[in-house]
Image (cartoon, rainbow, N blue to C red; front, top):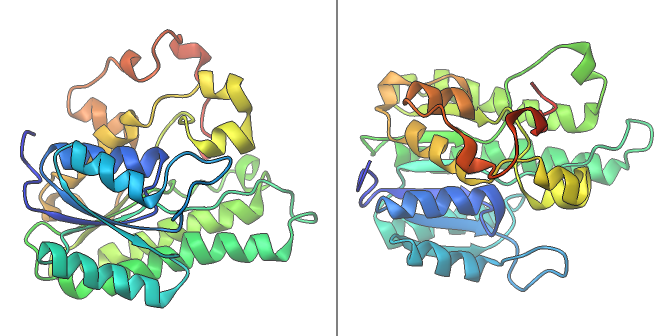
Length: 275
């Protein structure tokens, strides 16, 4: 894949850390120019990385980078990010809907503000960022939208676990599948991507399970490698799919995944809740 993203412009929500930053660095290694719209202007006491450190890491990986400080809930911030990407890098070829909020509180105890936050960031943010980029994606011959959200699983085991969070993540997926059909005639591919196991992120460390669950999770690099494979495809050959990280890698011939969880046996990895 060397150089396969050379000159391509990627617009990402979030990306100061974790999976989003791993994807941004991975695409930068192949020559991509990445614009990130993220809130973290100054260091957070519990979260590593800022917009500015992310830009430095993306550039160090070999790509162009631009950081826009803003909230994906803010339509003006979205407009600024789109304009910045187009002005700096000449257009937009890829949108990665990475920004997401997680809260696994039960329905009766979930504060209304937290429910609204998940809806606004996960669903509305995905919809509005993608919509704002569509006029520029139409001009690209390799246009992709990739949302980091799960396949819709209607098994009551999962539906009844965390309904507030489930609705928000499924909303990202449904919006993305809708875009795939709405813009099929424009050759804008739209897919989702989700892992079979938990990934080492701040959410896993701070919300889900601490150090032990981090040990049993794969590194964000597995997500990044799968995302690069999806985004390298011709838009007409892959759209409207809810893809699984490990399946994407297997299709590309990558079946030994030990490098993404060094020293941890396969049977000790923690399965993702949506699958």
